[in-house]
Image (cartoon, rainbow, N blue to C red):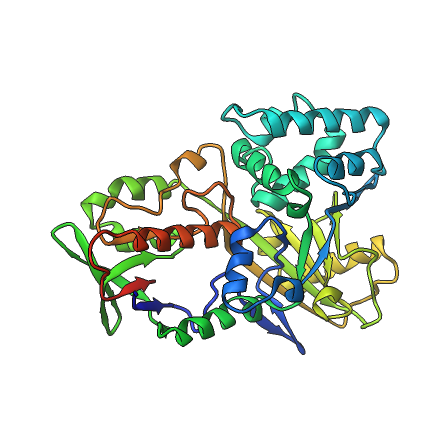
Length: 415
């Protein structure tokens, strides 16, 4: 019963979930990984006509980390918690003492409801050996929260583990067979337009239309749009729109204390017969953190190496960075000789930094300004900077609008 207008500032939909050209391929602006516990994402995919069984290659949770010593763990095809327990017991690279230590702490982390408001590292180092922290908890924290372990929120990290590992069906790793544009924004646009929604690209919102403390709509560079407003923007884009609104000052003060975490993806194209032993492998003690063999996306020989966080790599010439990454891969797997082509993609504002002090300040999708809601992975959801958190926040906004007691507004504007 609502008329929906979507305003997108960029030339294409998708935000950080979009794809770009690389040679004959379409690759993601950053290598994403899905887990089977992403309920809101999978519900959205089904809604827009994408069958998760067709668009993902699913694997049991598998951990391969190569460094001075190797650590391998694969969850078993058993009911929870035995799928994880069996995976730990049969893990390679850990002593019996370390396995027992890991089992005891995992149980403690998943069953203790009240945890202190500290970083993951501050809490975890009391219970786990330096080796376990280095080979499991530190890379897992960065992968899950896109935040260094010494800053990351323990509460959010625990919630991610709860969702992923309490049920066998929630812990599988899902590798997208399609590029992100083909997976989400393109079919979503078709779905919206089929239902009569209006979708505009290259329409950057310049200001909010306010009257007597209520938001009535938005203004772009050349048009006015009236209706309920959902701002689905990065938190850094909020100050120019909200700074002149007295009711928004508390919200602004909170989000202006947030920080970004950069994510770099280095794509390297090798001969099509080139393969890695697993679709995702962690690299400890190297510049690259994770390498993905994108054969799962029907892109044989294409490797995606992910680097999360700050570092000298952000200031290197792309060719130099790609060469360093290529040499790291060749050192680990000698059959990976010089790549035929490379591409480096820096997303300097890829994710909000899910820190201890940040999590309590995350804003609700409800604002104290009538007619204005927020959506985004930085909003008040149980999750870190993930597609699951972003989709969940959007759904909460939609549910709120459906529950309005008054007559539905003529339009809902998603900017």
